Image (cartoon, rainbow, N blue to C red; front, side, top):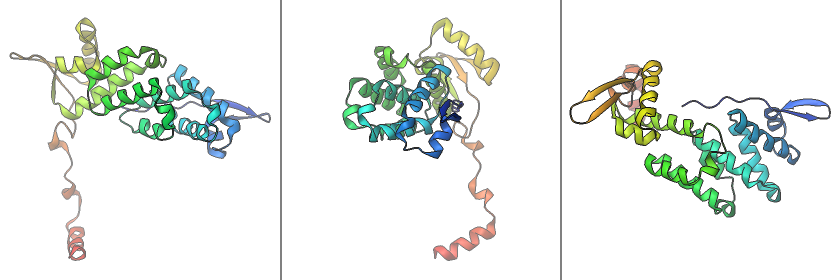
Length: 235
């Protein structure tokens, strides 16, 4: 799953216009840019864009200015980081958040959600997310991002995935799932087939994980003379 694109956010300093990325690059530990970074988090939410570097910079500034920390902003950063999975952004952000803050209920919930995603326990994830709609629904595109991650994870495991497994992973069923599958068949190369006694199967596009024979043999790409040089060194 690809990252959401970054967009510049303008900040006026001494009559000169800077992007948030420029402010972060020039002076990432300047507390004066903290409001700009907070506004940028809200802009990422509203425009469905994403900048991990800017968000990590803000979390570092909160470490130096704990009295200025906005837990609402921190929660939004963590939700955006969840949406970036399988990238390790959530762990990178969590490392910069004080333990006392992590013990707040909304953050404990997000940590649990992260654990469910990392372990592929999608039924538990969607059940927990349904109890915490006020947290996750504050960030547009959350459900679609997690569905994309779930499909990514399934594609690493299955050549053919049962309809029921897919439905549970992406939290879609019935006619909505039929429509979703039609779109995937048309745009992503999925194939639908019937299986005796097991209902519908979805054939996912081949990759080196669900079809190991497609994986390039590393030994084939190493010239023999290079291998010959390695053995005397190992000896």
